[in-house]
Length: 271
Image (cartoon, rainbow, N blue to C red; front, top):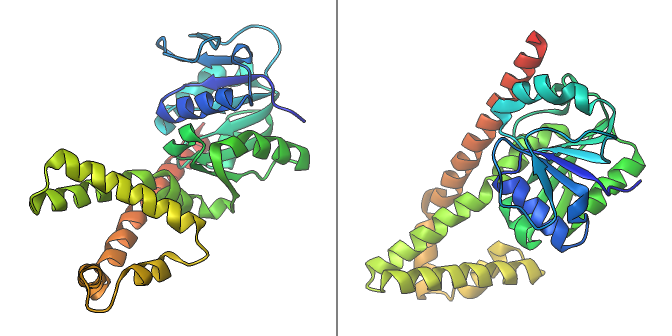
């Protein structure tokens, strides 16, 4: 089973990042992609777009890239036209496979949870499907591979993975800003502090990914007893302040995903 022809229903920041990486990696050819959106978009050369789906046979796969709140509107308008599509991929946060199956007739449905670094092939993509056979799973897995780290996860773990991997880049960006602001408070020019904070986080992440040591062990290797790094770590480690803050941050994001899933289930039951 292969995925050559692809339709995207909506193409915002995330779907657009995935599409550009797929074309760059030659997963799909631009001429075999159609994007449906209400407004003209800046897309890679050769990609077709419009405000209505093309006539003729269905593509190999359709990916839903709209906001979760638009699910019912999209389903009411497009589900009849998409009936029988071999693969339906959804990047809608909080929308579970049964909620999608209640609205769309597809050979197999996949929940896909990416994050924005997929644009550089350095993202995380979480996948789950209860309806796909081995051939479909292999095809979708191969399609996602150029985007970064691909992980198959249990359906009941999607809220946690979404909070960690999909929301996580935003939390890291806040951390980088906070580091830069702290350095600026010590007297560094703000622009220089931000450049150094970005380079520090990038280098530390590359080293952590390449190392056999855990991040905790690496932190201890950087920190000499009685040194300046240890003094800083003592602040972060006091009363497990950092762990508590991030646990609360991830829990809030996961809770919101659960709320969106419950809303999608309820809407599907009413339909």
